[in-house]
Image 1: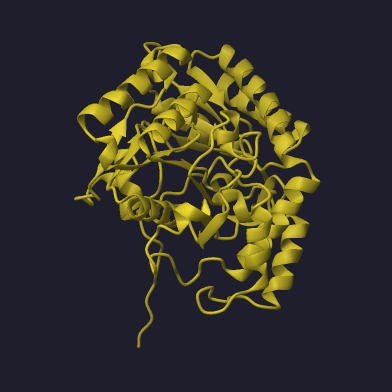
Image 2: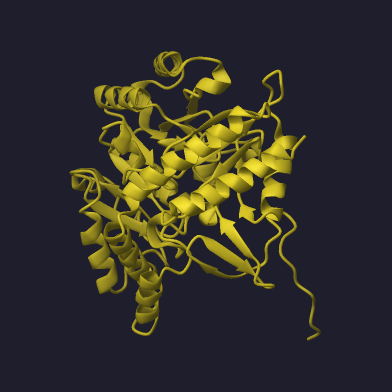
Length: 420
């Protein structure tokens, strides 16, 4: 048979021009050994930095012992140990776990569980939400039409309510919360009866939707309404979990107790692993045979997740995320204060966004993209997000130091100063 030339799909768009050869800590190196500050962390995945020695050692040891023990066929010790360890950090009473590979799969599993456990069909999400690209997860996603367009009809039963995005709404945070909760009550009265509503899905910080934190009062309002109506509160912690926001879980800032927690990304420092967690009584209401999968709970990924938990605890990375996140936020705000191109700086912990707007307040994706490209040329890797692509986000590994934060802010400041 004659050979052929194969290439990647043209639909894949690379955010930076870097061809990475290796990574170490907060840095990646290209094939010419040029060093870049990586403030993308693989979209929040390499939480302990690139190739943390303890994660590498754990993965290497596991690779030589058992690579794959399919967990509905045989059980393996890394999965059992990880489940036990996660019990130490999960919300009280949320103590049963189901593992899959990606955030989207975990969201699908949560939606399936919510519908089966409640006997209700509908789910409520919020404008700007991102929950994944598979059909059920895409049906819950409103961060941009690129996720939903051209694939309909989507899964029915999804209702969308406003998110308290104060900057976009032109309101104070308190006003935005009051508005969003009023509109949610209106939605429950006009679109999705509480008796038909299985779950409310919400991110503690909008991810792809523009790095907009959910105010604590908003999350508490959702919790109150969910509790009142027997609706499950599902916290999508795919991007915010495992210390990213300066607390272990993003919802810890609000003091709410979710019915279901979804986690992925930073869970295993780069290995594919995700999970949903729920109380035993809730998980048992799912239908037999409704959970499973070939690669879920992979032994190597579980070993890496155990090492990740060790590193987070031993190196105080949750506190570091809070401390360095505040340092980074102040630096970004100082840059924004001298630039009319940046209308807002926001975020929690090491999850921060700078929103670019025109003088009249309209989204300015063109300037955001110029800044994003210039930063990469200067050695700082970043990503954009938001429905209009006008937010530049910084999401460095949790091991980032004060000196590295300052170096990133200096590069960013030079980039912004050079835009005119």
